[in-house]
Amino acid sequence: MSNLVKFAGAGLPSVETVKSLSTTLKTLDTGAGLDGAAILKMDKTGHWVFGADQTEVESDSTWAVNPFSFLHGYIAWGDGQPLGETMVPVSEPLPEVGAAPAGSQRGWEKQIGFSLQCLSGADEGLECRYTVTSVGGKKAVQELAIAIAHQVDKDQTKPVPVVRLKKDHYQHKSYGRIFTPVFEVTGWMSLDGPDAEPEDVPPPAADTGRRRRA
Image (cartoon, rainbow, N blue to C red; front, side, top):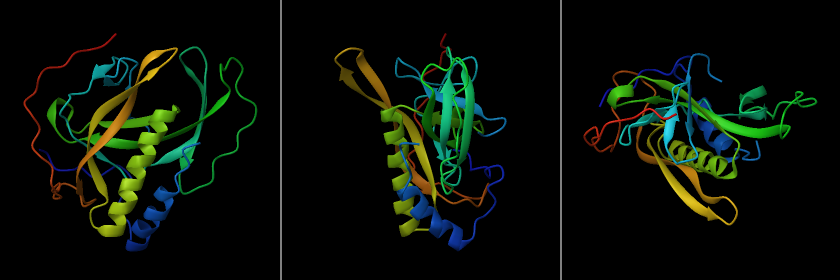
């Protein structure tokens, strides 16, 4: 597995900054981008994909989540396209928004998200941005945020979760099977950069191939 490349713009936070991270993430409002980062999402069939080509994520790849990248705010969607978006760090109050853009289907929707970087496999080094408005997605982000907060309380030197992108599902009476994201934490590492080694992360399984999804 490769070492973690420093998150762009993250730097090394002070001890007090790391301590305040715990409080901020514990109070993350689930009722709530990074330039140059690919968009990561879970599609309706339960596959994790990224980028304009909807490239499928390798099932056993590991990802490092930037604990200082959590955002909340609002987005307005048109016909499959975002018409407006405003996001701020979760340490700040939700931004104010005016009338929703013309053509938006559901008006302003609360959204939360974060950035992460692939640590292993064919996509090693790839930086992605994940944002979500669904109830299941926001719940998964909140659970990850709380896990980071608890880790910071326990060990401030390793606030970066190493995760695998998994899925769960439930049965909706009208829409059938609905897939929800799961961020499986497999270990923790520091923000020190290339010399940092992940803690308690099992080696990835052999590559089983990948596909592009339409």
